[in-house]
Image (cartoon, rainbow, N blue to C red):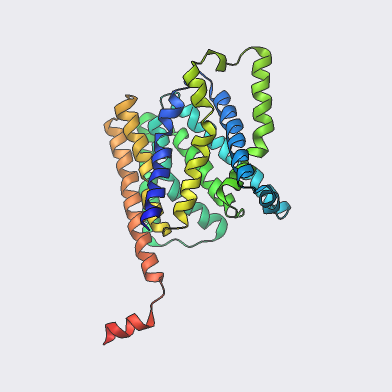
Length: 302
C-alpha cells in the first residue's frame, strides 16, 4: 500500500505542477502547444510500446466497433480538455483550472447517475448542492459563468464516463487516444511551417528541449496513476486526487500572482465543503457496503 501511495502522490504532484511546465511556452499559441503535446506523446508512447514489444497487444485491445467509437470519443474529449487547460494556463486562468478539477469528482458522480443509472446517497446530493452554490456565487458576483472551470470538469467527467467502455492498460489507451488526433496535429504543425507562422523557431534551445518532453509529461503521470489504482482502494486515490488542484491553486496565487478575492474564498469554500461532505459520506457508504467476515462477527458477539 505504501508503494501505491507514493505512485499516487507522484502522479498528482506531476499533474499539479503542469501549469509551471506550460507557462514555459507562453509565447506559443494554445493550438500549437496542443499539437506538439499530441505529437510528442504519440512518439514517446510508441517508443515505450516498441521497447516492451506490445504492438500486438495494442491492436488486439480494440475488440469491436463499439470500443473503436468509444476510443474516438475519448480522444476528442481529452484533446479538448488539454486545449482548454493549456489556453487557461497561458491566459492567467490557473485558478479556474484548479476550481474545475476540484469540481470534477462531483460532476463525474452526477454523470454516473444520469447515464449509468447509478444511485447517489444523501451525502453526495448535499455535496452537489454545495458545489452548485459555489459556482452560482462566483457567477453572480462576476457576472459571467466560470466557463474554463466548467469546461474542464465536464470534458474530463465525460472522458471518464467514456473510459468505462474502454478497459485497457494506460499506455495502450493513451496510444490510441493520441493516434486518432495525431494526423490533425501533424497537419496543423506542417501548415504553420508552410505559412511561416509557427513560433517554435523563436524558442530558446532549452525550451525546445523541454517541449520534446511533452510526451513524457503526459504519459508518465498516467502510468503512475495506473500503478496507484492497482495498489490502493479507490477511496484513498480519491482523497489524494485533491493534491493536484491544490498545488495549482497555490501556484496561481503565490507564483503567478492571480488575485484571490473574498468572492473566490467563498466560492472555493463551498467547493471545499462539498468535497469534504462527498469524501466522508463516500467512505462511510463503502464501509457499510463492505462484506462482513463471519469469523470477525462471531468474535465481536462473543
